[in-house]
Length: 399
Image (cartoon, rainbow, N blue to C red):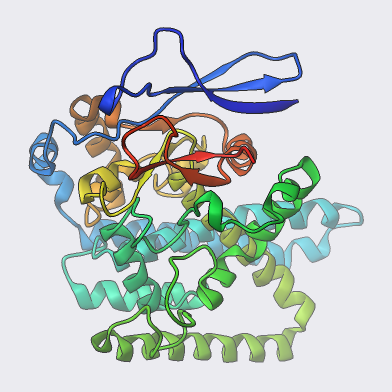
């Protein structure tokens, strides 16, 4: 079944500038129904950031060192339980039970370590505690063990939050206009090509971004998160980028020693595959937060911070929302108030939704279906041909 994104012309809701803000994904070639998608507003919001903050209970902005450590210890305890189960129980199982037990371990451990990754991400936002050195120390340790350059990504991610939705200055998942996409892109937008692209993206997208700035904003020279002298970082950030590199070197040396003692196959099964699961979820979460047929992007003539922060999407991952500390279904609030700890984000989201109104974006489509849809429908961005708002870009897929 093929789907086509098109404007709905029958009594449309109207957005800024008199444009229809309803789109639908509809099957071509017969069969199936129409899935209506309402475009997010792209006009200046009728509320301010201050008004949103006043609607949130004050305690939601309070960071508790004790509470944050409780969440972290809980995650690390579960990770330890799964580790000992894989180390001491799975090897004792009679064949073919290990063939079932290992994938279960990889999935569970990968999900828990994704939660650990999220806590380290909170450290980078200074949302873990009131103490910056504590946050940076905890974040550096956790992210290093997950092979993430903590300070390097902290700085580039901070710029993403400062420039969300900007085609000129956002740092990651920056969509390209039709004129700049690769010539072979249309040939990949087939079921087989899409599947291959998703597999490569989920498995390698995160390290490729860190190494080669894949899907990141263009720079005038080679950009890499491991290069202290690269264009991503300012001169005052370079020393801490080197600290991140040293942290990774230390962990890689430790992994080398473990491989020598336990064997490479053991290390891959216990650590490597769960890390691939973490990387896959990380790409999935961030991609789906910023990629959706209803979300606008802006050039410099239309972008402002609040409009960009609102051009994000909350998603529903079911039971693993809690495992991921609700980074999945409270992302809009996170972009508005990034220093708010995750354990208050759901309450804050409920408080601001009445004020946000149609500016709040949520899609409850299961994430695996959303991945497939967005990979098909969101290939490039362009302004609507008949719109006077040439600085507002929407996802499209027609060649």
